[in-house]
Length: 295
Image 1 (spheres, rainbow, N blue to C red):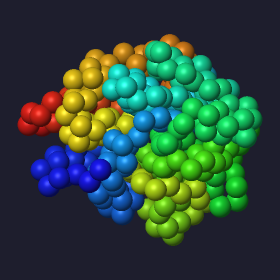
Image 2 (cartoon, rainbow, N blue to C red):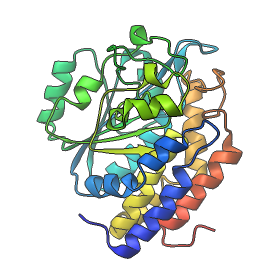
Image 3 (cartoon, helix red, strand yellow):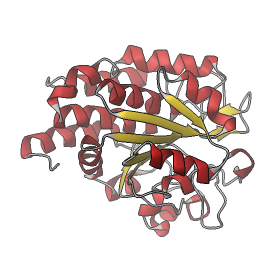
Image 4 (cartoon, rainbow, N blue to C red):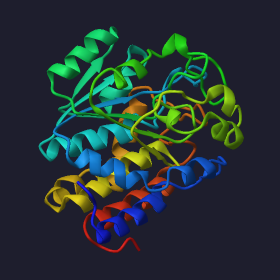
């Protein structure tokens, strides 16, 4: 579906809220993907069966575990889609499975061990749209690398191959340049924009890429944009697009062992920011989703 002019205007406001540099110097990546939120939301709005991929392991964590960014946004997006009648499943790997499962209720989470079998399961389920949210992707040497350029392949199954493995639409959300989907951008641009960019840049591309300030925000931006495009979904989505839900799911992932990907501490923060930062972002999005002014 193609957004109408008034819908595009609302989605541009949503994009400005979630796709902004939060101090990482990623403005170049954000500007290069301006308008992609509307395209991604339009693609998702016509989907009937969605497969999501998330989970970014932090081996240097206070207790090594998946980070809070990714599973929280994925979980809330998944539950919102399910409430709208869309079939949903989530894929992750063993190191991240406990944290990802803690972020959802009533959604099937595949702890993938065999990529070929996972592709077959998605095809059997009729998946027509794959969404990767804050999942480390393969770099130019085939290895997934964190922002410090460390090889994390020991804890990271190549779910890029699942993402690319079927005939589904491919959407991606990231915030650092090393996530699945960032291959849509020139490696040179990532190298010029973020530290270690040439080394960490993911080569796995996608159809539509949302570069957010925080990847969870990108998931929330998709939720708000869907509510704009499909008003009949507005009430179902709004139940999950609240500051209270964001904090509750963040707390659930921390209880399951998640750590902040920036501070590496086991605390209810995401990328170094607490509820005092995330809450107002989510509430602005909720107001737009409900047809109200953001401020």
